[in-house]
Image (tube, rainbow, N blue to C red):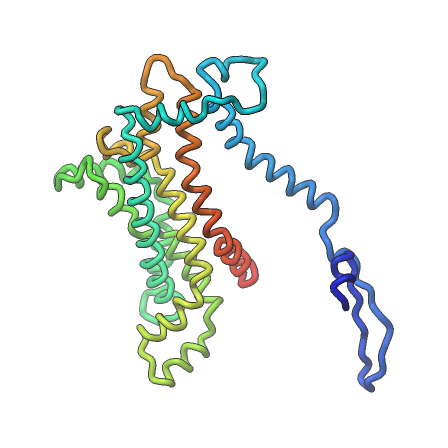
Length: 302
């Protein structure tokens, strides 16, 4: 089978008989995706990019762009002026909000990856009494809506004086039930028990086995968990809007202040939305390879 045959959408395989004689050649068709596959991917791509492009389109115009039925679908020339208005608005505190979002999202994502990998290793590869029941309890907590915990959380942080502090949105999110479940399922299938037994026979402790075997095997899944957790923490609005004050906001809370006036200039609002989306796009561009490898590894293992 040659590269030209594979690239041309066909592959051939020679059947070898038990006596070593060359049998008939089997031709395999359909190795390359067809037209409808690319058409479907194109539709998904356009549907995914259009909201961001529409935000950039309105953000590059003026206050009348959104209400103009005859507006052009080409970007205007006011995006940088609108972006400067967002950055320089004293009520928004854009740079402080950007730092708070980067700092809190990074800490939350790193913490979730560390604790989820440790807990996933314990649930997947250690045998202890009550392990399956405890894992089921952890997974069951995902059914509890976040809104039910807002009042007791706010009372708790109010009593310890953390309202208005960035730690109030970091501490409740340091662990994730989904992260524990995800890493448990991945490590259970990715790491054979025989490999752990071989490491223990060689004299490695459980911590050393986890570090050399578990962490190495969990890298693709951990990278994907980091990205998803970072995006979730970055876009979180409900709890930060309640517990943080307007002088120390995260980026979604700060951008909501652009809509608090009587007259809302949507060109400035959507310019701020584009600015808030750019760091996530850069993150996916940098870590996209790890994300794809994590998804493919999960698909193969599943």
